[in-house]
Length: 334
Image (cartoon, rainbow, N blue to C red; front, side):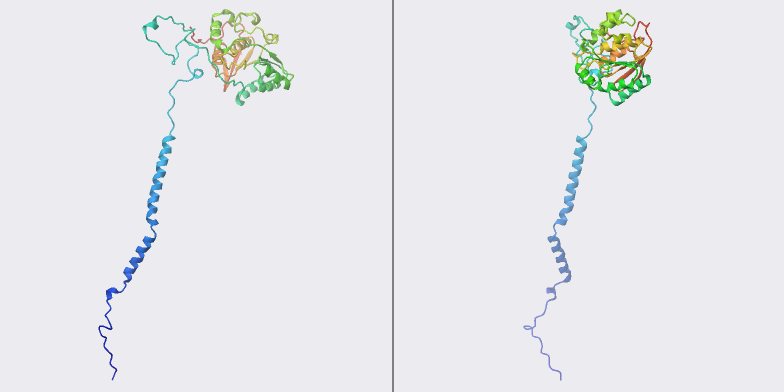
């Protein structure tokens, strides 16, 4: 007979409760929760990205606002760039007008009080740019050998003397330092020391004098005996006895109200040109008030044939019998 199996007593063999056994599902859930608790940075990363993106957008908006172009100025142009004539008797837009009864009893003097003397540039920009010098040098090459007269003296002008080999080239300069510096480098250059006594601030008075005085008109007589205040009567005799093919006006400096102005040199170039056959007169620094308006007055805008930068080229035919400078209507100064 088979041996007897002893029966399990309740006290010795307690029943195992199935609920106390570990569940694989719950165990897996606990592992996932634990892993999340151990890596809290995964929840912060989206927040950091959002903050950085917001800061970048705000920075771009700030740059766009502060770098926006400012509106154009509405103030009036400087006196030298104003489109209105500087010698006009009409009041300037910047002048204060008086509407009180006391002003109506005050005599007006438009020629003396309402117009300030023409202003010149504060910077002496006599050096020609490459394009300006090319315009001048090309003209000399076409006309060489010719008679070339230059008011002013710059190192680059010495090249013109070499281009004009076989012709006559004369420089007229009032600065002794410039003359010494050039002569030390080129002893063959023909340079004359001249004196200019009229300051640039007297330009308006001289223009009025020239219009009212018949002695300033073309063909009024020899320049050496002229009674016109604009005439240069003490130049070298070489200047008066030759007929000039090209005249360059780049002197005196005219860069300040007290400095010698170019009123007389522009006037003289117009008289000299009318005594020749077909004379080219080139005026530099034409952006300045005196140079521009005296060129229009005595060289005439109808004779302007070319320009480059601040250099204007006027071509004047034989007008030795003419008694007027320009046929066009002049500026109103009275």
